Image (cartoon, rainbow, N blue to C red):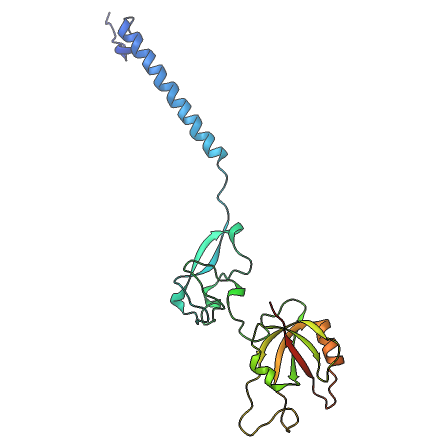
Length: 221
């Protein structure tokens, strides 16, 4: 009868060395099982990746008032929860626009960081744009876009609006053209103000020649 050699003679023997080898093997197998269980647990507990969206950012530092060129902007992916309100998602929506303030490289472009394409594009909700003539044409020289003003009737009287903002100022008249009282149109300003305030200005400006002529007083910050 032929004696068969055990498949793993170093492990199946009855000697001290065989018992030691079996003990080491059991420990190695146990450690491997624990590692496998830990890896499986990590995959189960790991949350899914957060959703991301496209956001247009400045690719290079941009000065205030600069017209954005294709190389000035780029699109990056950001976590949805970190997207700023009004952030642009398409670079084409930014190219050709003028920056309203300085931008650092990597800074997101939002609708408020760009100059409106038109004077009324950036109107606040519920606001209207109203052009009024100035009772004192010289006041136009000290008014500027963004300045907050109060509006009074041209001849004087109670305030009509305290919440108006200058959007634009009429340029000086051409040579030989005079304003109020001189036959030409009065120099004026384009104001942004709530619809209710605009109605009060139109109803109470006090003009007698059909034009809306008021006195505008700048407010301090």
